[in-house]
Image 1 (cartoon, rainbow, N blue to C red):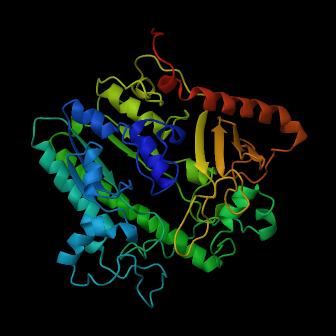
Image 2 (spheres, rainbow, N blue to C red):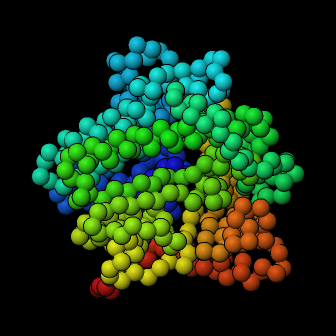
Image 3 (cartoon, rainbow, N blue to C red):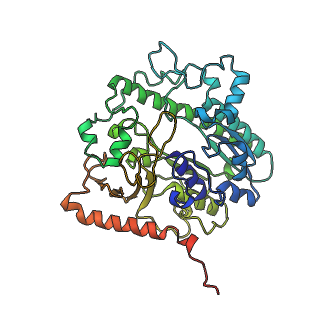
Length: 433
């Protein structure tokens, strides 16, 4: 889920520890973000694009440790705080057209009505290039967080990206029936069927969803290329760590759901690329890792100690091939399923003692090893998938007698993780009178 994942990424702490469990919940003022750690170590810090913190204001963003902030969360309710929206009003002659609007009569039903030059992606890329140039002029080291809204839904993409894959045949996920959805644990059923269900979307429209999604990916790829070119031109590329990752994936109707909020691979198996010339050897690594590991990794690569409260594990030894590194044999994830939502037209609100829409405990936890994935829904069973034999996660073995031992062992490990994750917070280094 967006906000919990983003706060985890920059604190190195699990959601149940930093307490950002759903979107639009305030950050705990006691949490220390990576930008604060680096700022206190003498770095200049800046952010461009989507932060998705709450409150969604530049003042709050600066309070987390950013010196410079240019915001655009890409969600209508946060537009009053968006630097992109303010910029577009000044520069786009068609600024009255909503930035997510589609062009009528286009072959691609997701073709954007606004020109590429005035899209959030183009603005985020250009402002990031400007920030890199400015920060590179100072002898001080810098940390910059650049975040694009795309390829998130809605899948509107401008020309030429709206037609880039128009003639490309993209494999689509198998259709999912209501009967299949009703075989899933109740929290998953409620999530997939909430609001206006999309599991039976017209296949032609779904083709355009995929073509537009990949158009959005290519659009972001173009802008990242511009940023990397700017870094090269600045002369600082050889001494700069570059990390590419994201907060979550997208289902795109795999398992009947279009967005996220689930533990299927399409949502939790996010990209992670790290570059540090002369230090990180080129490789594709099969090891398990999580966004929780990025804070300690960055700090070790920068020669800085990780705060005691950080729960992630540094990947520096793995990436550089030097020093000690013990490979993780499991990773963990957690989420509120279905997401707790309140609003004038949305009735999935959490009631203490009752839960959400019949889901008494919407909290869910997951453990994933190289071969197995287990998800536990308190009071509603779970899911168990053999990822080697069933990478599409179509056969739930949770109640299969032959898999009972595996399920029991993974649930025990899940319990051990929940008990021990906060040890650094709760247990004093020394007993004191």
